[in-house]
Length: 246
Image 1 (tube, rainbow, N blue to C red):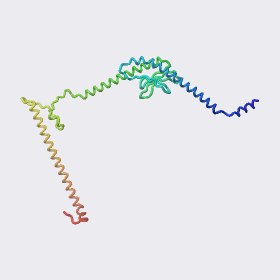
Image 2: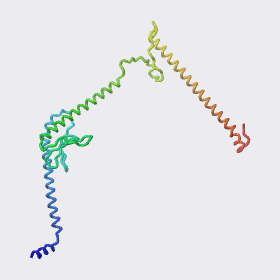
Image 3: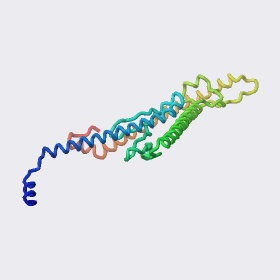
Image 4: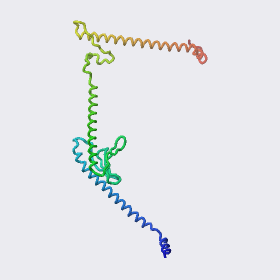
């Protein structure tokens, strides 16, 4: 009897429709379980948001560092600011507080209870506020240093005459002690006239040097051309054209 029953069961072909139906039921049950777990995570994060909101309400006015909110996704997260957030562990019950830094993501606190996470988030908010104050103070010091460097030296005496202000090539006029009984304006005028006369002499000297250099360069070109003509220019002229002109 047992052999006949087993032969009859072996003869029944497997049903693909039944297998698909079972797979759909299992997928729906799994999806419902995942959705329930995600809703539970969101509910726990909302409890944490309600617990940390009174702390954020105590921040100074005008500070826009913190904008808490829950990001709904495959793994819900409670963002405290742009670099700090809280999500749930693999058991869906443990809070994990992370911060993104230049050296990677670091874990600040981890606990299944809300109170330790709220305390860690409070300390994080305090540190961020101190960092903001230090950054503002550093900017203020740098601006003050730039302004002080841009100010002229108060000890320097503006004794340069207005006539020399437009002449950038003129040398700086040094303070000349006038003789006894001579007004300062006369001494300054004499010094300015001396500087201008020296400038004119220098310009004339430069012009003479440039002229002599040009004449010498032209003379060298002429000498070189004459030597080249005597060396092989005459022969080429006589071979290709005729008697040389000179």
